[in-house]
Image (cartoon, rainbow, N blue to C red; front, side, top):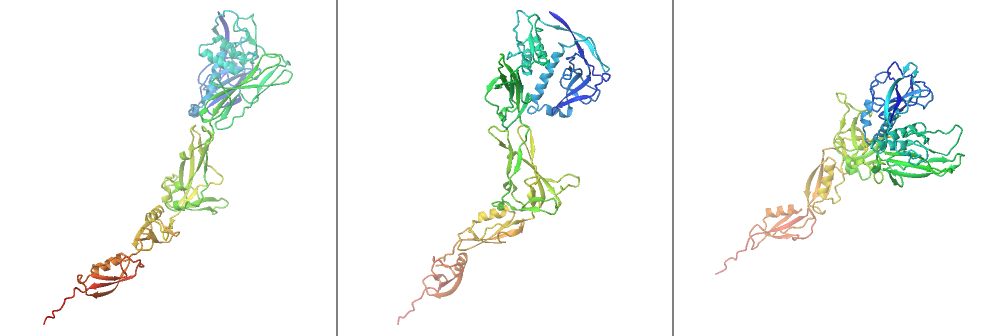
Length: 582
């Protein structure tokens, strides 16, 4: 059959003129503005439309959802809800982590109210409100006839308690969008929810008018269940979710036990765990109670898991012990600018800051607990002047150096830390007593390498690590070969970066060499190479070649102190037997 109803549309033109803003509720990207239009006794749903709002202060905003007029929240007045999105916030509105669930809910609500507006509208033929004309239109709505008697409960009333709450209405509307629920039933479900949720069944009326609003008679009490907190709640990822619960009571005020059921995507779950894995999920909590008069009263809450908190950056306190080899010098407080004072870390030129600095960037939103983003922290190094103010170049730009290179240039620096987590939240290091001012000195400390039998390779590495240059002289010594005998400058002394450190390196203990058969020149060279000097030189007849060593003292192989004199005897040549014949 075809039923003719009347619908009205609000005039948004300047001539209609909103009489002022009564209320305003804002989302990070979406704003819902409640505009007062005037008074009218009975109209509840007026219109559904789409378009630009160019007057009365609404320029520079454009409609994301649909606008509609609604009466009833404040009796005797007309109102218009205009849901818009501000252009400068458009990027955040599209953020799938932070904004998607709320935008989807508001879009669903807008569609719901849009369908209502074409149905049950005008009870008076015309109205005029503070100069704003309500234009009447005739709309044809086809309502198919129903075969057979319907159930006494509306099909959207899933808990059959003669009450249609928002979640039930939206769920039934979704079924209509999917083609499983009749449009007329869906419109009626939305209407019953909006006008007060309670309804009754009249078998004398045709579908869907057989379900009509049934508000409690004034002064008449009945069993009820209410949420302790708002219907839509955000559970912060990484936190412990505490269910606000609901309260139920009989008509006489006697408390009723409330049963609670958690569901996710229609499947029951034991609890809500706001972890990284659940980010963006929407849980439904259904509270129900059983009044003595029969039936079930229910109410629902939607919990959305979101991550809105950035990681907390905490640079670790620097312990001086064990960090000298990397160039750490001291931790001092600068009082020169009293009453302001600054904590400053002093480091040598060319210090290895990567081995000195450490910390945490903990984010509570992780899979199995907090996650540390310290490895992803970005450090900005800014050059300061003597007054700890940012230095700028000739073009007025802050002088910023790379983290790997700033220790090459003596000066005073501030290190700023920032990091972004998986949800796009950016955290920065902030503290009342900032702990990352760093002064790079123009000198370094000479490492202790001499006199400890330290292998020369390790000594060279330590010296080069603090930007000093090793220079090696080798000599025999009682220390093992290849170890450092002494150094100059001494360990712990301050030295300019790039200066030389002299190292005496041992060739090992001295042993008297075997000089037999050597000429005097060869023997002297061998003794010098072994750490000795040539002592007394004698001669003696010998069958060995003249001028070669035939004896030495001490003997070869004896452990004689380095530097001792070794005496030698040279051959005078063989003795010839004179002729004695005759």
